Image 1 (cartoon, helix red, strand yellow):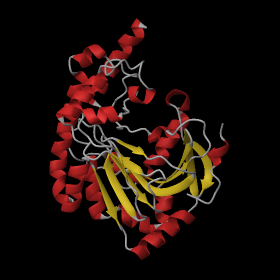
Image 2 (image 1 turned 30 degrees about the vertical axis):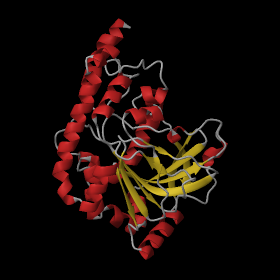
Image 3 (image 1 turned 90 degrees about the vertical axis):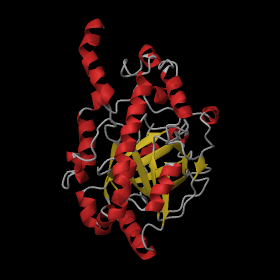
Image 4 (image 1 turned 45 degrees about the horizontal axis):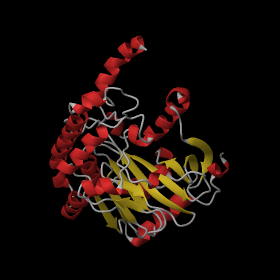
Length: 347
């Protein structure tokens, strides 16, 4: 154990200046002694300061009304992103497209993802045009706080699918200790009781109350709290929200053709579903090292590379599944909907 610790200590130390967040996997990050001296809080403060600095440099490219909504709430909800006719054509093209798919079960929900890769972009030119729209790209950069191209997927959420455990995404949480981007362009309407995106308005800001909460949680024994919180995605209670002077989480019931772009350092969840159902969306995600002081420099965002990353990541995890795990199971060629969800019969 001592030899192993000595060998791994340099790696654990280097991870302090990366997006590493697990209190379980890195004993320096999870050290209650170091965190009592302010280690976790220092990482939170520095990441937030650098994020704010980068966003100030990106803000002028964003529509004022979008920027104001984001700065106030931590997310932007944009209705009628496309003209109705263009949206209907894009939706039909996406729902009829067949391609390689992956699925993962969490509790009683199944998530299916299809990579928006060169094959899909070639088959659906309108999708390429949408993802290249300058106003949306500027908004994605601003929320991510980097000039980086998100990973893009067609995502299907199947709710109340008979699992024995609750869906962990329905627990209110933050994704990490620093800002990151997630976006959903909903291809069908989502009612308040159909698993809507849910967010605590204003919870993306690191107020004195939020910083005090971050310090308290860093002092908890990672072996004594729930695993997802210990791995760096903290769950939050209504009492915690009250202590941070935040309001309750609000479900966003939205019509189709609505784009929601959010900073998931804010507290969010998938709302509860009253019944089984499916929803389909264009789902985007971007998270970089929060301690980088520059805006660009992401070689993986270069054209020809950016649209291939998802398949590369899946292949990498397939190859090293024993060591790093692979929760995304290949289910062959599928559509976003219409086929039976293969994971339904998975034990």
